[in-house]
Amino acid sequence: MPERRVLILDDDAGAAEALGFMLESLGAQPRVAQDAEAFFGTIREWSPDIVCLDLVMPRVDGVEVIHRLAEEGFDAGIIISSGVGSRVLDAARRAAVEHGLRVVGTLPKPFALSRLKELLHRSTPHGPSVSSEDSEGREWSDADLRNAVAEQQIRLVYQPKFRCRNREVRGFEALARWHHPEHGIIAPDAFVPALEQAGLMGEMTQQVLREAFCWLDALNRSAARSGDPYTVAVNLSAAALRSADFVEDVWGLCSECGIEPQLITLELTETAAMEDAKQALALLTRLRMKGFHVAIDDFGTGYSSMAQLSRLPFDEIKIDKSFVVPALESRDSQAIIKSTVDLGRSLGLRVVAEGVEDEATLDYLNEIGCDQAQGYLVAAPMPGEEVLDWLRGTSRSR
Image (cartoon, rainbow, N blue to C red):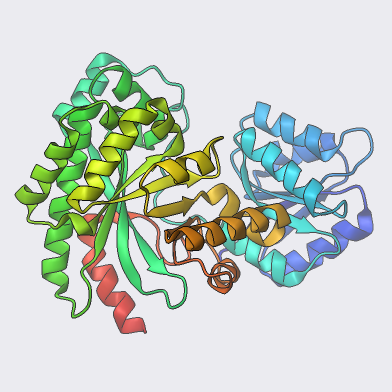
């Protein structure tokens, strides 16, 4: 693990010293600030990789510090520490995330070395970064958007989906990335709404589906597995539901790429499904009749999950990473995850957890009966041409 600069903000000198010793034993380089002004001064002078914030302090508390970090555009990792109890810690974590900060996790007092080690590991960057800086909320020009589609600047990376019980790779999720000539790699949240507004989402969706389907056919031919072939999941936008020809188009792409619909999962967020619930019901029913699988994505982040599960023909639930990442430190997240797994099993649905970054979280998911997972613990999203070599390396390491 590379040496990490960790800045501790804690007015309790004894607690800060103890945490500093633990960080040094793990190969990190700690510094301590006992008040907010010293803390922000050290950030400017030292540029830490991680800051560890105590919540309960005189004058300026940890939540106020979080607000100021967000105002100043702080982009390093944050560990939130306190002895106030798990529900308060988790609420502070959510507040920081909603401010756009990168929260590594929470560290209850008294400190546990194993937990601190896990958080340091989690804070280590995984793979190439995907830029949202200066991108979310950007007003893309018509020329930018047209070029993105016409020049096929939007390309796919693939993240493995694996069984919780044994890490066997079952398939992949295809994730869109805009390779912008000036702004680098842009995440979909920063460009999909603009493409929808410009009326270009249909064409982009066709490109993405064709790329994913033909890639999957080539992968299964090259992998020559003795067992079941790999699958691929692709996200759908709300715009897909408004196309009367979508079902026939996606069916035609399967034929064009030589892939069976049973190997395809089409993911739809509950928010998208709610935009036109009647159209969603018809479209998803027709997709299931053709043999496609359909998944409800980001489950639990909307306001009508139960209603959607009862009326729409989903056969997979994806638990949003906002619940999975803090699962080990949040009883609330654990309760939501377990209830979702139990619900999925009772309805005969496959349950997939997103955002699995450590062994302990995977162990927990396996223990409660979650079917599949994806996350950096096994692999970051990777370009399609790298997947086969990755699979061969994985099989050799077993």
